[in-house]
Length: 149
Image 1 (cartoon, rainbow, N blue to C red):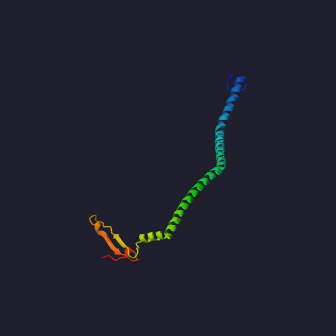
Image 2 (cartoon, rainbow, N blue to C red):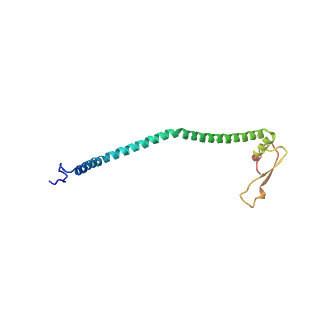
Image 3 (cartoon, rainbow, N blue to C red):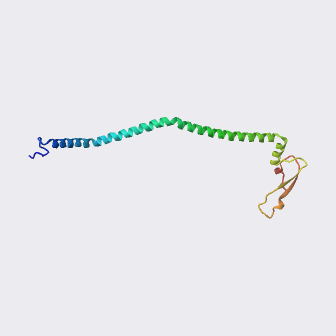
């Protein structure tokens, strides 16, 4: 056998170093898929833990933001409701006054004794626009209930 042959146990020290390096490389290459899997699983686990930690850390801030948003919306709705209530109070005060009661009664078709009321009927024809007036002598009843001739 040749002295530099790989199976020659009595080869030179350089050849023995080369053989050892080749054996180490083979061992490293054989463990590469396992190492890659461990690194991958560890990375995924670390990412999950980081996400969970950040989610727990950010949750109070997010909750506070949502609560502030809900409070603003509730205050805006309260202001709208208070404005509507104030308008209704003004309307009630007006309707409780003599002028308001008369105004509402006239809207409902009532009139005073002795008043002359003109009722205008709307005709679908444009040619009969002036012919729809009717005069009713005053009574304390709605004008809409008057019999038509």
